[in-house]
Length: 157
Length: 395
View 1 (cartoon, chains in turn brown, green):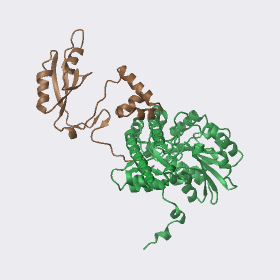
View 2 (tube, rainbow over the protein chains, first blue to last red; view 1 turned 120 degrees about the vertical axis):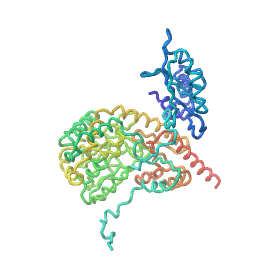
View 3 (cartoon, rainbow over the protein chains, first blue to last red; view 1 turned 60 degrees about the vertical axis):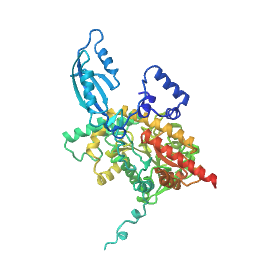
View 4 (tube, each protein chain N blue to C red; view 1 turned 180 degrees about the vertical axis):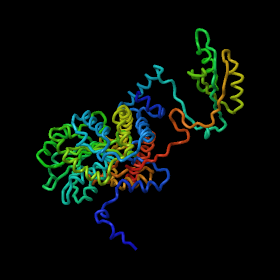
């Protein structure tokens, strides 16, 4: 994997100076490489990973399994694009296996999410069925431990 | 009541405890300390190796095994050395699988040293050599290395300390704590000198897979050196297998056949499960090593630049997973520096003096930690150094 990407995946807020030090290049070169990755569309954005239990305990997340009928000419793309326009939707993935789209939804409470599924998702043309799974606890997201670091058990060697 | 003072061996009582441990005993009692002290990888043992150990547990009868080690493992070690260094060792008669590199070092020292013999120890170095030499009645003679010479061993420094009692030269490269390496060109003059002597070399190459920018070169590759070298290596650092306790030594048959007796009586055989899993390590984990080395290299570059930036001159180490910045500009001794850094900023590092007198004025920083951890620690060290400078300006 590209060294820059690997470092940014661990910490996207790292400075260009630090990045340069780690890669043995100047900060200008580091900045230029990132700019190129952004312009090429390889890097699509930067986000923050939260521990919601500390930030806002009432937020709920659910993964919704959608079975859909592929549309003529555009397959699943049209439905996926419709779904991803909603602000409540965090991610949309086309899946192999027993269902077609996995949609992660965020809501301020259980009822919110339930209503979103029944009134918005299940009513979209082509959606055959939905199965909603509420997320009870997040342990790890994008490689980051949500509940803090793992204890370092190492001695001295 | 029993008098333990009288009961215990004088030699053992006179052994000093490891200078690394001291700080960690203090750090262990404090809250919120971040450590840059450990000498073992932060990576987990690659899954294929663990999987293979699980299969051994499930399917095999866990037994002692042959004294010198399982035959497939000795063969794999032999091919490894041949592939890496082009030197052939007979897997039957020239290799012993040991309990970590540590046991291999102990075997070599016990096998060579008689009371009164002198052993040259290249310093700064890992803490185990001199105490083991002294335990066996030998005299450890430090051969210092210096930052001006990139902490490499110079043939002149070596020659100056050789006497007619000198029997062994302990050469640990890539080096813990300095990160220094010895290239073919660096080793040439050392080997030229040794060929005319009867001195044996104990070459501790436990960090051989962890080099940055160039491939590790072993002294056994030089003409006439295999016959006078006890080569030591192991699985701990390269494969992140510290807890598996597995290493090996390769040496000419006359040496192996003698030291094998010590191993046979003292240890019997190395752990059976670990030995089985280690075959998998040698056969299929080269890409895992590359991945780990890439990650170490990012951290290494970061630390070297950062230490130089904050004014603690740091030599560019090409091996192992340590940087060894100089703290001389602070006016503190390395013990004082480490103690105050621990109490004032809660960062635990190891004073260079723990690795021999020539380590005074330096601290050892391990980068077997995540970048996030290293960045937090660097920030605290920078604050500490700025506080020191601020205080000295006021005076």
